Image 1: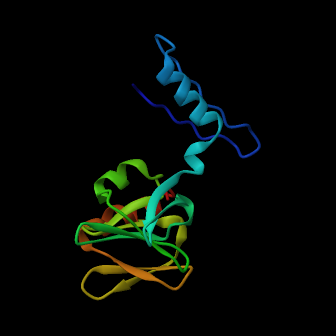
Image 2: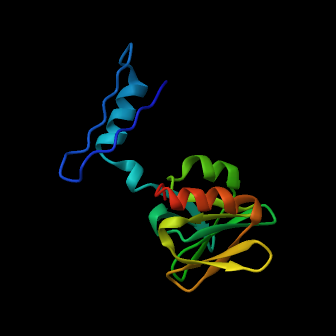
Image 3: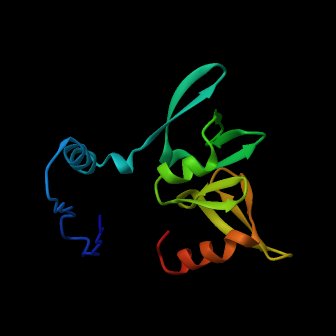
Length: 150
C-alpha cells in the first residue's frame, strides 16, 4: 500500500483519506485508530516489582538494553520489558530513534545534544539523564534533526 503525506497549514483540519479496494475489518480498525488519534497516545506494557504497568510512550525518555532486558527510563521511574529493541523500534512513534546498538531515545524529550570527542554525541534529557549517540547512528539522526523530521 502506498502512503502519501501532505503538509498543510496549522489552521486547516488534519484529515486522513484511505483509498482501498475493499473495506474489511482491518481497514475499519485502522480508521478507528486514526480517528481516535491512538498513535499520539500509545501505551506500552511494562513491569516493575512484579506488577504490570501501562506507560505512556510520550513520557519515556529512552530505552536501554542490558542483558536481554530493556529498561524504560521515565521521569524518576524505570520499568522493564522483555520486548527486543528492534521490536520496540517498529511499534513506537517516530520520535523514537536508535542512538546506539543498545539504546532507543525519544527525541521529543531531548533537551540538548552535546558533541563529545571521538565523533559521538551526548543526548541530555529534561530530567537530567543522558545517553550517548554512537557514530553509526549519529549521521542519520543529525540529518533528521536538520530536516525538521524530529
